[in-house]
Image 1: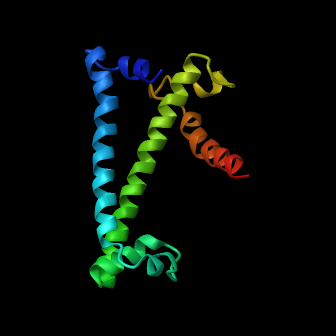
Image 2: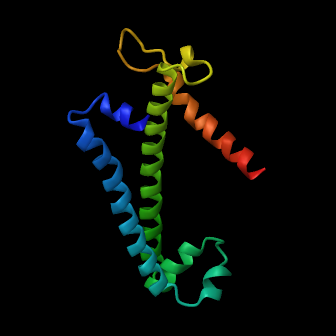
Length: 144
């Protein structure tokens, strides 16, 4: 389904769609591996990191590596910024997939989610409202 959604908007789908799926996955795996290696070299005393007052071991790891509160704050804000951008990208992707499934009548209430505004020629707001409401409720079901 993902390849078909990408394929509707891209030329030379047979070569570009697999590349657009595989390349980011491989590059992210390499970067994550490098991050873990750096983290393991800078973690210091594991007991200090796991028993931190902040209950966030990443803050303690950054502080032990830099010995500076300002540098620790910069690193943590940078990590937060990356997570924030990734969250927006995730919601954009999920709303696009929700609309594609609804357009093909693959979801309950497909008529509601597949509506396109004739005036603006964009998807209606219900497609964008669905993921932020459904994904946390699914997470609550998984943790229950």
